[in-house]
Length: 165
Image (cartoon, rainbow, N blue to C red):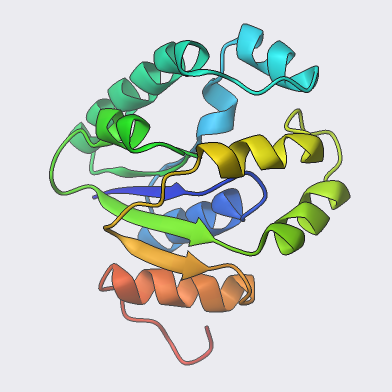
């Protein structure tokens, strides 16, 4: 099973994606960890990435998904802001999508609280400007607690959720 958790920075992709991976006993990959050093340097200086910057990164993630499928699957947390990016990551028709959505102010507060992350809060507007809302997959509102979000995501994936979650 291949699952991709998308959304702008600060929505909780890593929290929800790693929770899904733990529950399903699948490897978890955070796309942020696969950026080339040039991308990280650019974002660290407060400059948003363009399509050209993202292409090698997205291609590497697609290869990772193909390889992961051979060993049972994986969960990937990736912004995947544009439909063209998601098309590159859709390595087959069975990819399951979970899109995290939320109010800009809530996300802004979360990003301001982050420490030691190269994606700076000031770049949030560029992410919202780039975001193309998909017409498929689960649209998961981030105003819930992480446990509530995880339970909703697992139900969407057809995984029984205990009443304690």
